[in-house]
Image (cartoon, rainbow, N blue to C red; front, side, top):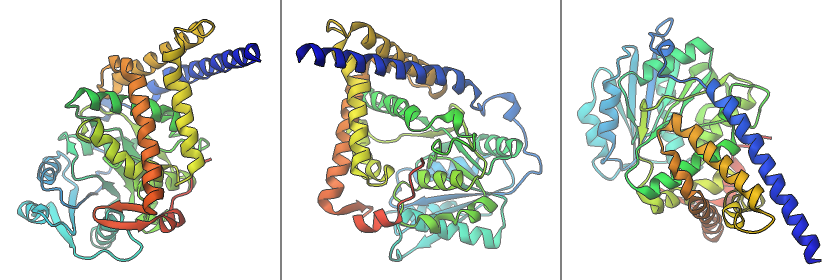
Length: 394
């Protein structure tokens, strides 16, 4: 029996190694095909010079919102309107917005949250409805209040969207790193993302499960926004950026993903503890509140990202484990060239994967224990969140 179990375990180890090789080869071939907005071909004024409205929802973001709005006001793209939405803030967020209001920037104050709405989706829906009615922009750009934009970020993004015929363009943000544990977690988060959705397949309309949505830079044609029902259709979706991307892909619209190191910048959270806290709210929602899918994710993390580092010292597992470890480091290297994160963070992969597993389980247990999610001071029942969750891609 021990001999049988040993052989089965070794077969599984070799299978995991083969799967890792397949994914790394795919990434090595695919990632270079993903557009880089820093290239000269995107340093253009977009054909037709379309109007863009940037929508910035914020609640109690007094520490970040001013810098975000100033970076948007400094954009070198003239056909730009900015709508800042003060979503029931109890700090100085609203007054900071008003101090910057002017010809290019106007402010909406939301005093109450309607039933069966999340604050952020409601804020974005209100702003979108107003600008579509009053300004009729060709594009809407949804972003977050803690994002910093390089002066040419919007122009380059719009130029790429126009040139490629994109209905929806997502630009990967550059993470601002202040601590080693942030680097470890966020580097691994990108590795995990390679398995959740392949960036090089986002533009492939047949690859339905490869949809990417990132709240830092969600650029969408107004016509596409209306076709998928806008954020009205995602009123109770916690991970609204991913839910929006899935709806775009399901509708058969042209989705694109691009890199652009330093164009769109964000400090995601303070330390590994802050990242885990953010994930507690988001990650269970990202899998549609399915316990089975989340547990499979934990199993994957253990088998594909932790076990090889443990078993590489054990007779019979040295070679397949070494192959997996090499594949992980190659993945880090491939992404480091586009994200700016150091490939040597691969040394911390088992630590980050273990912490990532903890975050997954914490998100699930906390949500089930509470019977829902507390976000921005409001409790949302799990039954309602599941009812309105965006469908998972197949």
